[in-house]
Image (tube, rainbow, N blue to C red; front, side):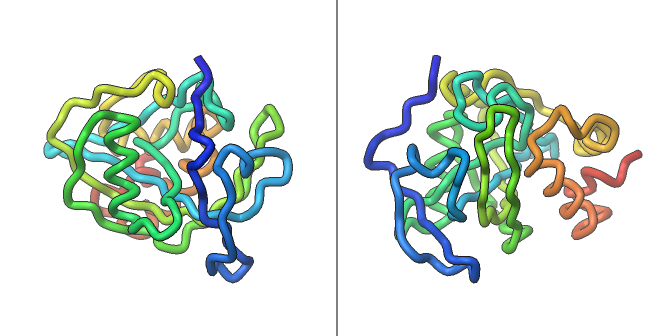
Amino acid sequence: MTATIPSDDLVVLLGEDGEPCGTAPRRTVHGATTPLHLAFSCYLFSPAGLLLVTRRALGKTAWPGVWTNSFCGHPRPGEPMADAIARHAWTELGVEVEDVEQLLPDFRYRATDAGGVVENEMCPVWFAVTDQEPRPNPAEVAELRWVETVDLGRAVASAGWAFSPWMVEQVQQLAELVPGGPARLARAS
């Protein structure tokens, strides 16, 4: 099943300075010449401190079938980031989130997947909590697992090639930011 992107789903285009400079339909901005645009990554925790990792659906345009953080997305023009996070948590995982907190406000990356699709995003990283059991949307998520952060850190350190490139970079930066807290993802080796 291929993920269907609504034709009116716009993303915010950014200039090299990170400032908004326009919009474009989401279905047009992930290709061989992807323009810089605004996105987010969210790491979703259970009240017990387990982290949800997901395997991207096989129908995704970029990095199909790759394991990654809990969920990612794009805020729509004028949409507050917290609202975009809540919308994507519900759409992709069927859960409500709370305690939404930004940890890496300036995260940016550019990467090309095996099919030639380029990601080029200013992608702030957020943490959130849910006490609900996910009901994943199969167009977005192929599999999911609740894991200990230390176990994910070990997996990323030993087999980074098996994860999305943005998550590998984020895990390293989060571990440096909060080496003793829930973000100790890459410190376990």
